[in-house]
Image: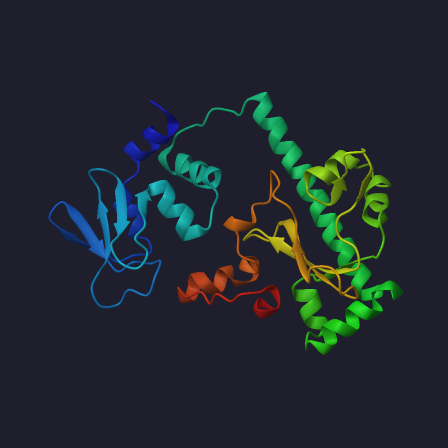
Length: 267
C-alpha cells in the first residue's frame, strides 16, 4: 500500500475538517459551511467519511481528499501535507532517492540566489545614484519608502551585465541565471541581463520565497511598460498572484480576497 493510501486509511477526514469547520452528520455524510468562501445561509460543504473525501457545492465547486483539504486550508505544498499527516498517522515515510535529494538541494540553492538578487535590487533602489529616476517615479505614484521596504521593491541598473557580474562574483554561473530567467542567451551564445533600467517587483510564494519578478520600465518609451520573468522550472506566472505573500494571512482570516488588475493596483 502506498504511503498516501495508508495515511488516508488511518486518518479520519471528519476529525481533520472539524478542527476548523463545524460539521453536522446527515446520514452517511457530514455537512457544514464552507471554510473557503462566504457561505453563511445554506451549508454547501460536504464530507464523506467512507470515501475520505470532501466537496463544496457552492461558489468554490472544489473538492478532494484530506491532503487537498489541508493544502487548501493551510496553504501547504503536497509534501508539507504528506509529512504532517504521516506524523499524525504514525507512519514513517520512505527516504527520498539521491536524485530527489539533489533536486531539492538545487532548488534551495537557486531559491537562495533569487533571494540574494531580490536584496541586491532593493538595496540598489534605496542607495544607488543610478536609481534616482526610479525613486522619483515611485514617489510620484504615491509609494513611500515604507512601501518600498514592505514589498521589497528594487531597481535593475541600466546595464547589460550588472546582475551577471554581481552573481558571478558570488560563485554562481551563467547557467544558474538562465535557469531562473535573469539572463537571456542569444543564438550566438552571448548572454545579457534580462532586466535593465526597471523597477523590480519580486513575485513570491505565499511563504515569501521570491521565484520571479515583474519589472516596470523607468525611462525608455519604446519598450513595454511591464515585463515579467519568463516561464522557468520554478516560476509559473499563471499559477500565482502577485502580493499573495502579503495577503495570505488576511485572506485566510477574512475568507475574502480582493483581486485587481496590475502590480501597482496591488501595492
